[in-house]
Image 1 (cartoon, one colour):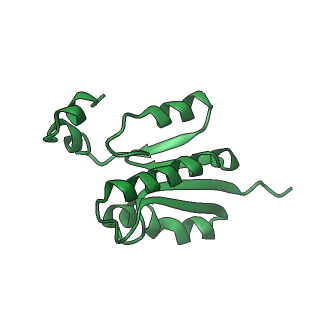
Image 2 (image 1 turned 180 degrees about the vertical axis):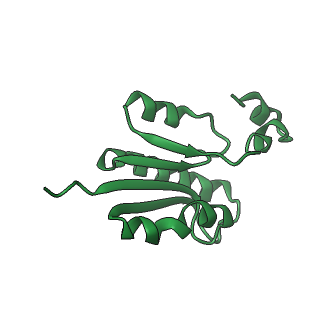
Length: 126
């Protein structure tokens, strides 16, 4: 009897050129695949991202489209958060849908928000 191959979707913050994503995800992909684990990676911020709000909205839209495919995977691995500077609404929706997911938080990620200069960002820290 052949076991079903485990399928994992990695929703990374950065592409391969982002050190945190490379450290948390990309370096392990060859080992997962050697272990018969099928991996897909969808990064939010890509190399060359320059902080443009318009470009960021396009990248957020791509991430929303990717979320429609989560049912095709056994596990979703989220690096830090799905949408930086946005309340965890989509993570909550995944929970309500019964999607199994793992969130890998950096130990000081909350300082991205509680110390942010813009009052509205600090206001929405949950």
